[in-house]
Image (cartoon, rainbow, N blue to C red; front, side, top):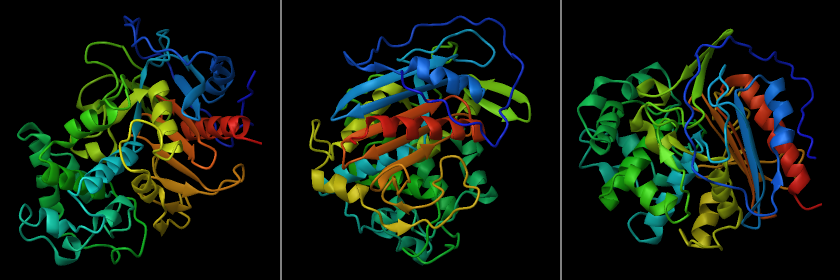
Length: 402
């Protein structure tokens, strides 16, 4: 049996009281692991228990086949509603690599260039755009090297506002960019790494401008459906009124609050291109495996050379002290992917975290060995980070070629 139990954490696990009574469980999509794949459930359970997580799931894809998968725990903290392999988990900023792939499709189709600027594509939609911001390129936005700052109070004020009740998401993204258009860049474009969700909102708006299709429809039609990610969707994981997926949790001290449905259960939808996707761990492994195959396996979403361009690092992140969930802590950054050399891997691997501060997802892709490892939980913060780090590292060591 695979041993995923980590060494004792330097941080204490959060414990909490049950906040909900018995809730009706509903069946998840009938997904199963590939025939002959290893069952990780028994190995994941000690990790889940040690770190006090409601649920945890993980999967491994090798040479395009899911070779190991497991899920354990409950959909809501304090209940007995068990998770299944078909349960949808939130991916947070792991959505960014999917947005970058949509850009690659537009580039392959001649609708965009990596060097296209915000001004070229959106200038007519954003009058009064700051000249330095207008000169930022698509590639700089995707690699967080645009000079647009990381989220702060002023940025959060743009995301959370009453406009959400008056506009569809495509015009809402343009309104968000107009609200930001006069902000000063914190560094010259292409010079420094600043993890920016606003940058990905702008990417989404650029895609919508050149395709005439909302980002939400693009990712569904052009990525989820061709890859047959049947559980994939956008926004909160659970269907409103049902406990049919592991829900996220807000944690404050020893207080644990399940966030079931509605606006509070996810980031504002305007942030879609930056991080609102969800899917099962099985489908997440399919996405990891497709990337690990360097675009040489069906479906042909982008040319292999285009995917290699997406995977290629652009800028050093430097050492980021106390990174927020979903942000890389060090290494280099490509387009929607971190590129990191770990002590447990022979060569740098593609990696990303995703979190909406209620869930956490982690993906590791080794294109040299055609290997993808994913792990997810419906819990945030340090316990989740420590648990998923232990799981992905252990699974990588077990399944990577000698």
